[in-house]
Length: 334
Ligand SMILES: CN(C)C[C@H]1CC[C@H](N2C(=O)N(C)Cc3cnc4ccc(-c5cc(Cl)c(O)c(Cl)c5)nc4c32)CC1
Image (cartoon, helix red, strand yellow):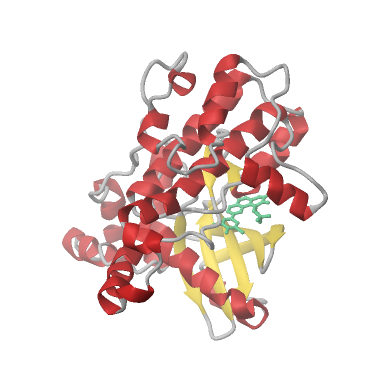
């Protein structure tokens, strides 16, 4: 009797590979392709007040499709549980990688940080702010590429623009000055990710945090004043980009467009960061053909069904066939 009958025949569950907060993450094999996936299992009873984080994460991940963001393949909801079927990242957390190497040299930190900036540029372009960027939320795939996870705290401020304007139309007399500032208020919501990337880059290059203190109010004081020290091994270039990210005033903090072409990031690459998604908008013919043959449907019927993006088993099978193709494996269902 399988513990999770909802997965029977669809996914072959293996060991637990991690747990975080209100979730357990297990390795599994997608039955039709044999591809490895990560299954994030959450029990609705223990979620309680955290439930909105799950619906936020699912809604956000359904809209995000990028080479440096952990892909959501399928959502299974029962009356007691959520199952998120996710892209498997065998090399685990970037956090553990930094700890294992004490700290990274500039060249290695640059490779990782370019991928992190690309992922953040993409989610900002999609209208989302992640708001929880840290090494624990950056995983590594089999080629040591960055995969951003955990969208439970992300916000879609642009979506908030309407409610922002509604507030002003409603009772402007009670609206705070930053609400009236409107555009600037929204821009600042996105700037929080730049600050976190500054802390991230510092951690990559130093192996410890710029702002740290056992006493939480001392820690807040350091953050609010932006006071941190730079170890002697940091180059002038590294110190300069970190200081542009760790600007206390969000208006003075470097913007994503400026970051994408910053000399510290383009050094030895000599090209601005290619942040756009490498996934094509149109459907992949080989995958559609293989799915149509396997399900005894026409290509047209298959394209119509996939285009509904129901995040059901069919969506997962399409994405995993595409993963196989991108890894140079045969586009075949078992
Ligand atoms: C401490 N964290 C907040 C949670 C921790 C849970 C295990 C996970 N993991 C590991 O710790 N390995 C060691 C292996 C591993 C392999 N592939 C994974 C693929 C996806 C995810 C994942 C986990 C969560 Cl909580 C998500 O929200 C999303 Cl969108 C994705 N975790 C994976 C994962 C890393 C993060």
